[in-house]
Length: 280
Image 1 (tube, one colour):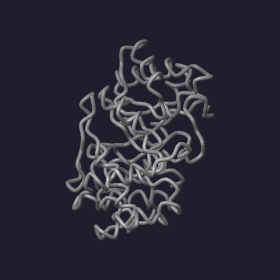
Image 2 (cartoon, one colour):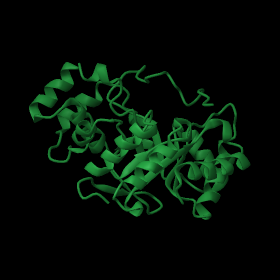
Image 3 (cartoon, helix red, strand yellow):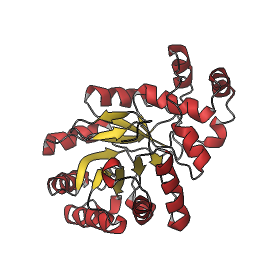
Image 4 (cartoon, one colour):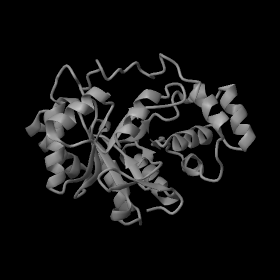
């Protein structure tokens, strides 16, 4: 693993860096070059999804990189339309074929889709795929505690990770505390929230100025000190390096509280509530 980014151990023994690269919208040759540059500056965790339509791009970046495959942690996600067991198994294979990989380090159910009510059989497909060596660690995205409790009750297997919407405007304190109590790692998608809005926030700017850091670095340090894995997206090599340069300073308790205090009841970026949202 990269020496510059700390790692954590999941409840199944798999290790993950505490910060990775989000790859949404990074596609084609340009996307592969951006992802390769991230690997070159030190990223070892790459987050993709079937619905991002870029698993092949991620795989190409991995092949272009000089970093051995076993040092990388590559994630993809099962889309909502393929949660039936047989379709889920086929989709896992297809995800691997697209990326030309032999296994994923982490594979997640993208959304619970509660109205469809197939997430338990999708979970069973992930459990079996792990037994077959196609996946090293299995988890979920956007699952509420009741969804995860049902998974464990009906299959006996608990997710290692729940990737959730988490940013200073939506701090997910209750959900994060539940994860901690149940030994599930929190992973943050869109960790920088609405970038234009956070970068104009005077409170965050004051804290950033105090530490001689950027607002994005302060926010990503906040995620780290919360115990969450963040996956900021950037195609710029300079910004990619900036985003992982957060381990030479720390936020004090007051600053952590101020940032967490920016949370809002309507903090979701697109109002995607896992209790009702259905992903295609």
